[in-house]
Image 1: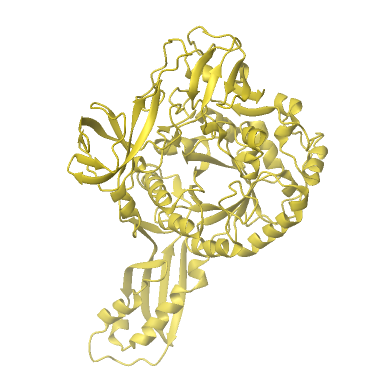
Image 2: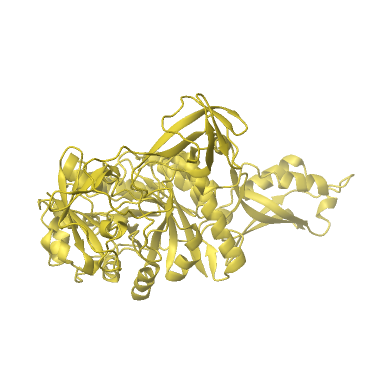
Length: 637
């Protein structure tokens, strides 16, 4: 059977534990330094605590050490990795190749920041000692299948949910170019969420101050089986900056869907960790931060991937405005509201006097509608479907669609206990010559078609004394008190005449305690990463260079001498001081999104190229279309 892993983000220890409790098979978390989210670092002590908690359930912990590294940081980096190994981390995510040629004896996962979009690149990474590769978000199912067919001996990890970067990961330099904040150092300034004018070669505005590089959020909850069949074994949720409510809701939704796949549909798939999760709420992805959802390019190129009118959360559609007076509004629909709800709507933006009238591409009524601006407000008081905002928003009119991007009642629900994870066990108590024997067995992987069973045996040495009253009830009560352990007793068998003898409750409690702490019962399976004794030497295979890496060596992301030496052994001169010229490589294409793709049968062009993106302060970036590779590139100037 193939083990499927739900991989959840952890901003901190609290989020990591919540992810495990709500069904994650693995968690990825940032180290104190060198993670790709500078604002999401955690102490090694907290990471060690998370490892101890997760490993009870055979869940794994991966740590992001996936920034590019400067020379004066190398010693600190290798020292940190040694500390993480001691803390029990299962693998580290890596971007900088300076880490590869060290004898680390720890699992290496190639971060999506290493730009993993072809079979050749994935095969090369496998040759360098990576046991897993995190795929580019832009890949289609067929492209993933081809990678798996070409490199079947490497684990494939794919994003299934969360925010999308418009550029191929690791290939965005716009933030560094404009503000000196490198996305490859975890300091992205989110230039893709800003407003731009789109200007043609004659200086005519095609689009005025719109979020032309801002994408919707990813949601592939309906495609888990297709991704697994294509070769993906780890389903990754984005969000190391998100709070615990996000983690609880999203992890629960995906875990329940994976459970249904493994339990009801496919006997060849199983969950990668142990434990049964009981949820005390119904997850709803519409109620979690989102800019509208897209499957991105999973099933080919689509127009619903971007959110050009707003980079903010939209949330769920809750009805239409029925009427508006000076201090309240009424809503037509079936949704219920609570004090403190956050609502929003699109209002018309002022017309741009410089733009000429053109036919636009009508999207889904949520984003992509030309000339719209998202306006939000907070509900102060609710009287059924009549809402009293804290401050009446301008531009609200009858007939407008209304969205909720903060559900106060749902947030309150998520603030409490929303799940519990336990490992089911079966107990057998019998008499033996020395006294009494307790055997406890647990299933190996979740509760579905276990491939292994673990057991522990403890003997209580004592003289047997016949009891005056029946003992079965007390034996069951004492042995099944497993509340503060990761176990729950589903079945207890008392064999023979064991319940005819008197066993003090304190002795039964001691027997239960020894069983619950038994290493045999809680010992993890050895993971693939743990079996690696060394990452080995560099394999001098041919690095799959592209036209972009040849012409723009900065895209290799080399900033230290070890990484430069690494590429030199591959026959490549990676210049750490190469100028930033190519600023983004995107599969998102403005030609296509605006309805003028020359490759997919769009309308004839109405502008003269090259096009430019222009910020409000006048800075420009040249846009070029690489139709052969179905790619849009953004350059300086």
